[in-house]
Each structure stands twice: as structure tokens, then as C-alpha cells.
Image (cartoon, rainbow, N blue to C red; front, side, top):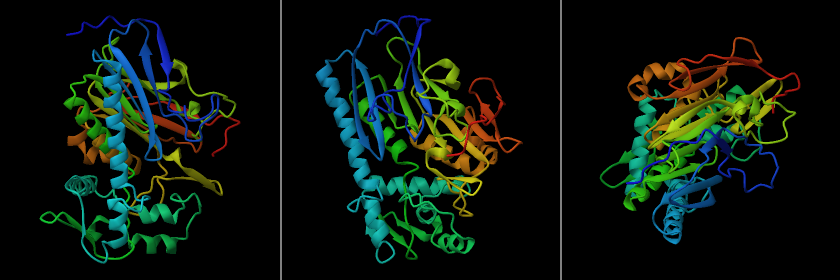
Length: 388
């Protein structure tokens, strides 16, 4: 058993190379939602780091162990290969994936799925019911309607939205457990697992780490989900900071005079200590466009067809990465109403929400268990700030 040293009071801040695929010093249009906070001091275990682009983002993993680095590297590569395999099953944009095949054929005939994919769809349907429709994997046609699938952003007419909604809803899906098949009751239904794919991949990665008895690891999928296994060798928890909207360059509250990514404590809204837990963050400005004087984000309420406008960002800590992914998306749609509807899932959980303030250009932060409980702060848009 390794005895952990006391954390050093000196702290360094890193972004886990989230943006290392870009040129040094460049600014990411996707913004920075979290930072990994690491304490200085001796690391008494072997450490490897591996990364790969998948699911339209960058996955990165850090492993600590007494095992040799080449052995650790092989474990990391196995995890990244598994993430690639999951993407090849779930991506609606890969023509050979099971989800893409279902989207093409399930309105015409039953489509057979692998048992794991079938169980994932069953879980998604349960989450749809528990969130009272705020989470819906059939919202794909709405994303296309607003131009979020191909970047051809537009504000559709109400008639267009109404006709698109006819193809949205879990009630259009029939799952047959005996044969592991899926059918749609009408053409035009489109499954999109973008809200759960990364969390699902993280859970599979945790299973691989457990198989190899690795007890100190952290991995992330872009700026949306970070999963901590055990603790780092030089500390008692993995510390993750949530970036203030003013310091996230994709946010409408961003300080446009900033020339670098957030890098110190003053850039943080709060921080979270993770041990065998996941933190998921969703923000409407991940993809957004402006029409007139309004900004529309890519998180759409599947019940009315419109992008959410009252909540800006949500973050949740959960022992299960898929659950945290679902809950952040649903909270963006339903706000604090969801916390009442899902009290059994959120009991004792840490969560945070940035929502519209009383004035047009202000926001407020409400949280449970993150920082002070509850937190309420307000901020205004910088004078030079403009919505993206």
C-alpha cells in the first residue's frame, strides 16, 4: 500500500492538454470548461499519458502505477481503442455504425443491435421517462432543423419546427428484448447519442482499468466529461476547477481582451475534489449562433423544439459518467425544476448551474455542494463583450 505524501501548498494549473491539437497559444472556439489542478511534489509511481481524437473531441488519459511504463502504455492504448470501437457503434455520422444503420432502416424493418448497444438504448429510454422528456435521444431532427449538425445555422419558422417535432419522441421507438432489435413507427426518426456517448465510453474505460487493477487514473473527453479513478499519488483527490464564464472564450460573458486560456485560481468559479467519480459539464455555448439580438445554443428542448434560453451551463458530480452526462443535459433543459423531479438521483450529489440573471446581460450561479451551499453570484457582460 502506497503512503501518500501530504499535499504541497504550491499549486500548478494545467488543462490536461485539452487543446494540444491546436497550435501553441491559439484560442479554442469551443472554450475551456474545466481545468485539472495538480499539486507539486514527488510522484512515487510510474506515470504515462496518452491521447487520441474521437467522438469529435480529444480524449486523454493519465495512468499511475508501480507497473512498467510500457505496460501502462498498452493499457492506455487498449482504452483508447475501446473508445474508437464505441464510436464506430454509436456515431450517427459513421455510415457503418449500428445507430446510423438503425436511422436508415428501422422505419422499414427491425434492425438487430449488439446487446451492449441495446442495453444502452434501454437506459436512455428510462432516463427519458425519469427526466419527463427533458432528455431525448430522438432530438436529432431538431439539431438538423437548427443547423447544428452541418454548421448551416438558421432560425427555422414555427411551422418548420412543428413539422420536425412530428419525428421526435421516444414513443416512436420500439425495442424488442428477445431479439435485440429496434424499430421506428414512422420515417424521419433519428437517434443521436451525442449526449451520452462520452459518458458511456468513460464507464467502459473504468471497467478496463478495474480489470488491470489500476487504482490511480484520470481521463477526459474534451471539455464535457472528466472521470477520476482513485486518487493521484501526490494528493488525496483529483481537483478540477470549473472556469468562470468570463474566462471561457466561447461564452457570451467572455472578456474579449483575453489572449490566453484560463490558467490560475482567479479564473475559476469553483473547484471540485473527485475520487472514484465523474464530473460532467454542459454549456449552451459549445455550439451557438446569433440571429438578430438572440443567441441560440445547441441544447434543444425536445418537447417544444427550441434551444434552451434560461440556463447557460450545468455541472454535476456523479459516480457514474453516463448518468452525469444525462443529468447535465436534462438540467440545462429543465433548470432547477429537474432537481425537484429527480431528487432521488441528486440526493447528496454536487451540482452547479449558471442561469440567466434578472437583467438581460447578467447571470447567477446556484449550486449544491460546490463551494458554498448554496452559491448565488451575479455577473454582467463586459462592456466590450458581444455574444458570439
